[in-house]
Length: 491
Image 1 (cartoon, rainbow, N blue to C red):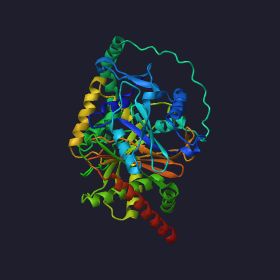
Image 2: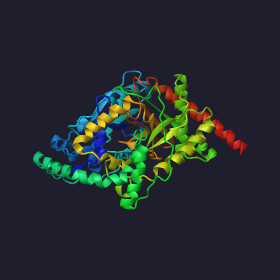
Image 3: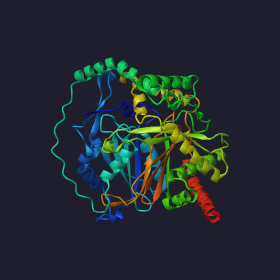
Image 4: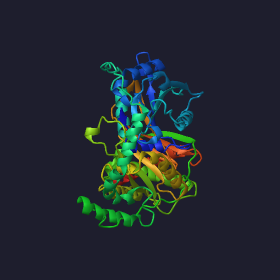
């Protein structure tokens, strides 16, 4: 039995009639590399079933504490049903990429059943080119981007011949505490919570203006400075507020505001060698190029919709703070930072230069924050109030001026070919989540086998033309590649 952290619970609390808390991936597979030259539901179930003991979160289900007095626990599901979790569907003819994306959009909009382990996998037949697809979704309360990538590593192989795994040990029945014991333990923690929270105040107060959404309100900066002084006095802390830093203010856009429960999804790949050519020509990082591409894409979309702000967009960028010691841990070891996306600049070279300096500044800005700050802030409220506060905050932030405009996330993946049940993985497109507070668009990219695989999730009503963004993405790379060639010749 393993208790969820305060941050893990926030991904449960954030769920509503319009917001889901799971993340996922769309894997495109070549079945011709299997011995039978086909990928079947039975074969997929057999593979996953043989490795469940290596991917323990796939067997966990939630155990709630009565009256919400404490955070829930993960327990091994005594009634685990693999057939429920691994399913198959087929696309109608002709089975093109847009039909596949529409099916994924509908699947990702459906919440997971909290009475069962929080994941599902779908084998999808009927693709136009004869390939197969597997769409998997797992609740964010159980994994983050890095642990999700490691989960892929458990289920995938490096050759078409599936690796042999040690058979699972005979499972021992896990004792489940009675509801009364869980409630009493929750009451004890509730009584101690004010003391624990008070001890965290000096450390966290100095960072309160870095919490997305709070920094724009009058007095919060002054409160953070006071916290910095208090931290120095009580803890000999660093006291980071020696100088003021300019605040990032997200402009209004057509894709910010309350989201609907319906989604759009689009996907596409870019060659990593072209991205690296741009990187090397301008002396920047791959992530800088990715952010510049996103700036170009969003600028063109905003221009097309006659909605280009005269200031940069503000992006929320997730960061992994997972240490080597936490490599095999499930749950979330993440933080976030805010960074400007220079959509207000017309020149693509200027956008790339601005992105590079902005990312350096953003990392310097957030470097003083403790790696655990997001977890610590999440734990300031008692468990019984956490869900109510999270949902109220989401509704409030969605109804006011935007805190951030969109999420852009870059997740590292394998650069060698991978196989699932013998079928070669051709591409692996992330399928992430959106909320009222984070905007109606999420752009997540995963590197794999010489490509950058982009997955775009959008609110169906706010960005119905999400496939235009994929077209703009290819145009943006062509533009930067041309500039890189010119820059190299001039050098």
